[in-house]
Length: 104
Image (cartoon, rainbow, N blue to C red):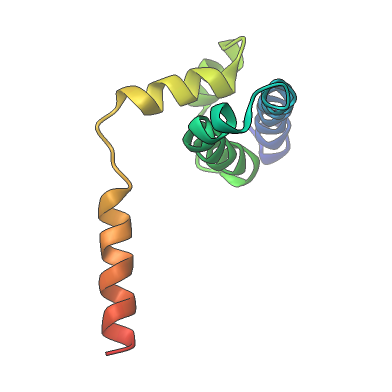
């Protein structure tokens, strides 16, 4: 697959996910402030997913095919994120240590 085809396919997935995100945000507008606060983590993670879909160029053909087959790619990736064992706490811990070291 050449670079143009790759970028076209990736951006199509991104656009579908962006449309999905925009609908999600519109639905949030009907919620109470408390309900929106409860959705804050979902908002942040979905924004991170969108960023990667927009700029990441390390996907292989199999990954693109998989994402193309998702009716709702953003939802699918978000649910998978919730089911994995990854944690941002280690990254935050490293950042705190780095800041503390730099300003010590």
